[in-house]
Image (spheres, one colour):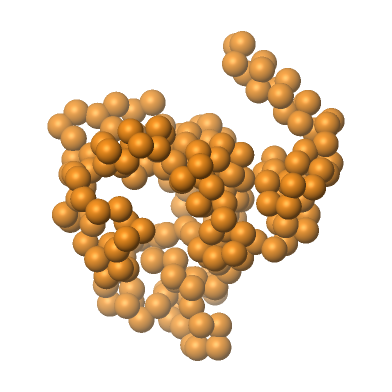
Length: 210
């Protein structure tokens, strides 16, 4: 009860007082809880035309496949996922460039809590564009290697999942997977990263859901 009261109180304070934009550092009156002024929000590199299964951006001038042409639903699919889909559905709202890359870098390597809130809110906005039937049932943050977790002091995936889980009232299974030791993802090529799930992650015998 106390926690809920504090959150509502904090929202009221944030709505009344000026907020500092996480990108340009200018003060502004907040209209959304994403710590972005209207100008920086428009500058975000949105991943608008992307494959439904892998979320990789598609060439807007190149014809794409539609899984539901008979229903009129736009579900573009890339050539690779047409024969071997990477996942049922992938949601990636931002391209890893410009201000979006800056936010991610600050979250990962500088423990940027405000940047995490901004990215989580952007993800929530993207998720809510889809029908509720396509919303997740459980959030499973990507685990970190032990040394990386000790060095950074937190797991950025858990931080994002916590914000999203609170907003959508979803459970989080932070201990469902564990990661073996290995090189950091940012040092690997895309081809090598695709094999990480098979070589670096494994199920835990017991896990906790909160």
